[in-house]
Length: 208
Length: 406
Image 1 (spheres, rainbow over the protein chains, first blue to last red):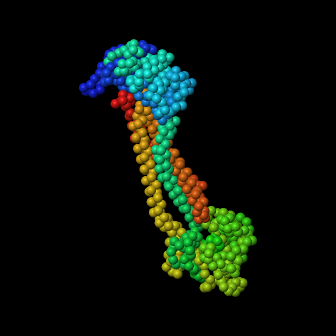
Image 2 (tube, rainbow over the protein chains, first blue to last red):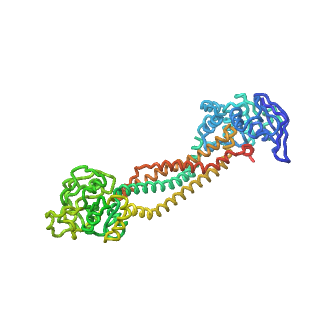
Image 3 (cartoon, helix red, strand yellow):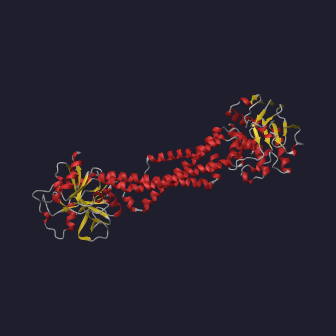
């Protein structure tokens, strides 16, 4: 469902990264490995349409991302993607529930409270629904970020270093929940990381 | 909803910005209300009076005393001289005014029924004065002094309540006027003869009907050279009089003619300096609040670049972010201006309660002008102006760079 072909990215005159061609079927879980600076984040952002590609072809669900307009990208991201970053990037002015409500609101989908309860339940966060972001621990906040990413039942979940800020316990817990949430929603999961702890969790691996 | 939460997340900042703007708007509102009402009052009180003729002195004083009843008389003029002016062909109406006494601070004005007609006041109860020492009360006087029809009272010499009391002659209330929202509400009206009677130590000549009645005060002989009044209010017969009459009076007699229109304009130009300073101060406040809102938005944008980027990643378009920042700024300024209007009216309301004089002047907080709508609209524009640069920045946010975390 995701395939790339002849993709490379030119940072400036000196620096250019080309990416190997690959394709990933619906529902698969993949790990993007590599040292920092190897282009993991760039590739992930290219796949997610956060960065406009200059060369090559990226197809997601038979849509050629390189052909989309700026606002087309925005709509496409909202409907088909869930993002998780190293930092949770939750909006601290809002409660957990309102942070989650933002996802369908910005994607132009219906806001569904029961869906929020369902996802929070899956991530063992039911009692945190009305908490403020500042009251959460790192691990909890990262789980809320996962909840936000899967809330719209995206076809693709892109995670950039989701565990590298967490201790071993939380790392295990978060990656298990991430995998579980992707399976629940039959989403394709791509995790970019240099965190060696994840190698044993996800079999499909791509080295950059 | 998001905007509200952002504002709530920084209550001090938000309250400060709203307060700054509200203060500026409040000052403007008070000035607006006060100035407009004062001008309206002055216009209605001076309506129909083209010229005031009285003793020489300050022309402004002549106007303030004889039209607005706030300053002291300039002195007296002889009835014979007043008659000479009144029969000038350029004069349509001449109303005599005899001032100098008061009751509990309310001025007693000796005049004739033309004065009532001039302000188009109607009688609420009882009847207008007909005999000497009969009085008719203005509505405010009746309400605040406690006098009723049939009551009698003793006037005091001068315009303050502690003057020498004229014990010998008591006034008798025969009627009460309806409120007209003019200066007449604060006056006690009687005929000119009453004022003379009160001030005469020996009164003998009253009952003799005159052979040739005076044109302005029919009870006395034409050309009487003893009796005095304070002034006459004049209505012009034609526009030519505007140029000729004041010049004629000022150069050919001991009298002085003052034009209410001219003098009130002069008064406003004097007051205007103070008003301008206050207005300038208010604009400074508003400008500062605008800057403060701009800086607050601009700074919060740096903290919020992740929020903005993550919102983009969730499908928000650039346009939505742009609009949300603009809304945040204009929401602040609209709230600020509405709070400011409320404060402005509140201050004026307190003022009218605490300062009784302002009630007499007819100033009230219960009036709304269309200009106030412009104030709210103006602050909406101010909000947009303050937030447009931050909004453009939000629009331009490079989500890749922000989220890549470098």
